Image (cartoon, rainbow, N blue to C red):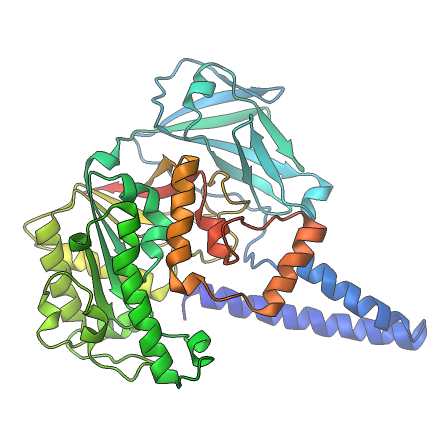
Length: 466
């Protein structure tokens, strides 16, 4: 069982226990106080839960984030004087430098019910957990000019700012001038994580590993049985993986769908030479989902969904594209099983290969312990995500996305069939209550939660040089 599944199981167990205790108290109120009181309180308690306590936050907001920056990152103490950020000594801050401000936040009482945030001048607003009380990391990328001129001012919204902080300057280079290959476990992962990067890269490749055919209930409503619906969904997402990058100017010849089956990569990895069929599509041949590919790959010979075929496909693509920058899921931050295996497959394929990339960028489209990160609204900045355990140090690499690029990214996500079905009624009702009672505004680009999470001022990666 993955760490995220363990946390979710613990969360549900605690919630059931809390509900049981609450029901006992309500019954006691009805018996010993007034019979009608539980009937009044029960819907009010449910509304309060949906508005303020429904987030999946599997850690205490009072815990410190723990980041270890590589040795080449420069740290400088700064002062916050009436909200103005004062450097103690001049720094050479390039306009596209990745800048991170480490500071300790403490929410006000209202910050337990409304999202605490730090407002950065007139340009940005970055949001944190309700009840925040610990070390956090603001993303100042894009604000180098204001910072150097001493004109950057911070204002706490529903939280208090400290008087001292630490500015981290992360050495960086413009990776848009290099050959970039994005590894996407599923159609839409490349767009969620790296649309801004690959749409502006000198040369870009988008390689999608799985068809993402499972959980096709939306298509079963059209009268299809489970297997037919899964095959239709897989074909649509395979098409998306090839067609949508064209919106960003990536030629069709550099968009590849490998057609392996969703959530089956761990089983393939466990038995590398054994075919692993789709869970729902009644398929054991990947070629149905490869029909839009512009090239022939080793796995096309027999269509068998094996780990060895996946490695052979990846090696062929890496040798053909020769990417200087390889973008793939982060090995520890992103807990999705297919994402973990995608990263492992790429590293195994690179072993002993004549071509090696210069830089690896990791991304996280899912987190173990916070289902709202990046917190806040569409268009705002992306803070560093929660990290509560020390470990390997990766340097953050942040890209600034202007408003036209954000809008193009939103349109690319809107073309993805998996983000188009309407949300369940309960989720829509919860968001309506949160909008009325907790001040959370929906994304203007679409109903799916990924429009809020992904269409932001920044794209954030973690860099490792090879």
